Every structure is written in C-alpha cells, then in structure tokens.
Image (cartoon, rainbow, N blue to C red; front, side, top):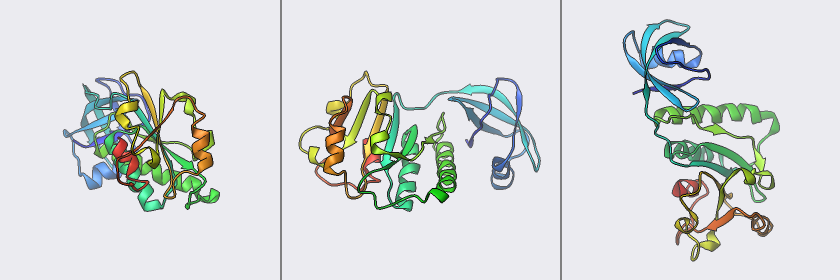
Length: 231
C-alpha cells in the first residue's frame, strides 16, 4: 500500500487534505481515484485512509483506522563521514529501508568530499527528499530525518546510550554482539570516510565514556557498506 508522510496532526475519523508535490504523485503517477486507500503518517502514527476527492491542487482523505508500528525496537542514528555523492545517497536510502532514524553528515579529517556552504541548503533538500521517499517505499511508521553537517568532535555523544564506532583494527576482538545489550534504547553508529579515521580522531573517541569500537569481520568494507552491515 502506498504511504505518505505529512507535517500536521492526524485524527481518526476526520477528513484532511494533502497538498504540494504529493498531489502530483497521487494524481498523475499513482492515478488514485475516489474510494481507494493509502496509508498516511505523522509523528510516529500511521492511519489507513480513504481517498474522498482528487483534484489538481489537493487530495482529500478520511482517516479510517490505526496501522501497526513497524519500527526497530531501538532508535539508531548514523553519523556518516561525507563520501562521494552517489555512495552517500545510496547509503542513506538503504539505511532508511533497514530502519535508521536519522542520518548525520559528518566531517572527519580524511574526508575527500567537502560541501560548498553556498550549496548546502540545496543538498539538504535533496537528502530530505531521498529520506522521505525511502521511508514511504519501505513502509516506515516514522520518516527518517537528516541532521546538520557536523564535525566529529561536535557529535552529540551524550544523547545516546551507546556510540558504536566501526574500526578495522578491532576486527579480531570486539564485535557488535559483544557491545550490544537489551538495555540500549538510543544508539549512534559512527562511520569514517574512505581513508578511515586518523590516529588523533581515534584517540579522541577513546576518551568518550559511552563509545565502543567494533570490528566488521575479516574484510574491509566500504564506508557506505559499514552502516548497512551494522544495521
């Protein structure tokens, strides 16, 4: 069933309207008509909705019943070092399909990719569209979000129960299962760039109490593959 995310509150047995770009998708791509059903979500709540009317500017719907929550049992955010555009966007799309809540573009010392400040807002809008589409396609209950581009040292480590750093030198010791416990509710995955983390960055991360380094097996994974492996 097609799913859409809106930015306003929904109430059971009440009509509401969808406007903007989703109208084009519903009317001209999906070719929905009166009486058909879609899922509409906001703030972690999804409703099965009947389509009441469809016109060029808006679609009117009626929220009929609640739909079950299909999110992960824990909140998982990803701080991903900036990598080449197509790889970063692939990672975002697949991470959302696998259940990531938020993607934080991260600046690390060995980043090859840099964001032009004059184009950052345009890039963020593109990323938001990718996350929205992936959330809808994978039938998420919540829409994944994009955080502000953040330096490694400025990541909000204290907001998480556990920060898991993918680090190739831990391949023979700590694994994900050895640091993951049932008590964890909020997790941050920290993934370095193609060149890996610098020695100074690893030294800094080791000073943070809730950080655990984990290996990802005997092979070296690409930066965009590592968060998907962890998820």
